[in-house]
Length: 221
Image (cartoon, rainbow, N blue to C red):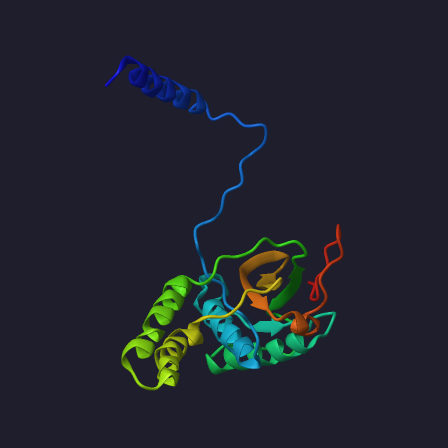
């Protein structure tokens, strides 16, 4: 290797070391590890959440054998009315003592916050989506070379869609944060928060998103 080549290699290595200082005029953008989040788009999903919260409340030692009162929200929505009824039913079904007044009972409340994103960056497709698409295209070319009926090329692609479509759904620019809490004597005994995507057209069932700089909730203490 010539002297000039060695000089270029050594110079490049030295220059790369300068970049190792890790300086920047502003924080560099990075991403979170890939995660999933469920979409809430049916009353059945409200029931699933009510079942989950009822089990968690019954399992909490601080609420063991305590009578419960589920406080109606100050702002009624389709979700608040349905979820209160479903949570009441699930608690009673699991053996809880649910009272119709807060006298001598721990008070259960739930809060719903609608979050509307106005400038969200593109989100990567579901894991395996591009691989399945590429495989489907590759397999679909086989009939043109070996089969007599080109329409048969649709069968492999349709099979792939049937295989994966049930677990895929699009992301939404609107989400809800649903928090269930229980307190007694101004002491918080239980708190649980859950996040879901919702369809933009369904946001009115949960309450409206807060305007910029404001915090709005559809249920309060």
